[in-house]
Length: 167
Image (cartoon, rainbow, N blue to C red; front, top):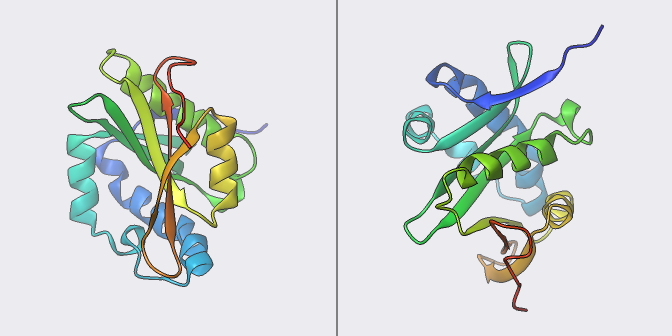
C-alpha cells in the first residue's frame, strides 16, 4: 500500500532537507540558463533558517522525507510573494506543485491581508509558466537580467477574478 503526501508548515528541523531538495531541483534551471551561480544553488543554510523563522514555509512529506516545498510572505501593500516552489524530480507531474501552490495561497490569504499573489520564473521555464497559468496567474512584467535570462513576473488576485493583467 502506498503512502500519502501530506502538506504542512515547515519546521526548523526541515531546513537541511529543504536545502538539499532545493539544490537538487534547481540543477535543471541552472542547466537551462547556463548559470550554476544562481541564488538557490548558493544559499547558505543559515539564510534558509532565517526564512523559516521569518516567513511562511510549507513542505510536502512522503513519510519523513521532504519531497516538495514553497515559501511566501505578504508585504505591507498586501502583495503575497511566493517563491522557491520546488518538487522532487521523481514526484513531478503528479499535481503536487499545484497542491503546494494552492496551499501557500490559502495560508498567505487566510487572514485577509493578501490582496494579490505574485511570483516569478525564467522565460525558458516552460513547465513553471504552464503551472502558474493553469492556476490563474497572468504575466504582468518581464525583466531582462542578462543575455541568458529574462525574469517573467506573474500575478493574480487573492480573490477569484480580482486581478486583471495589463499587457
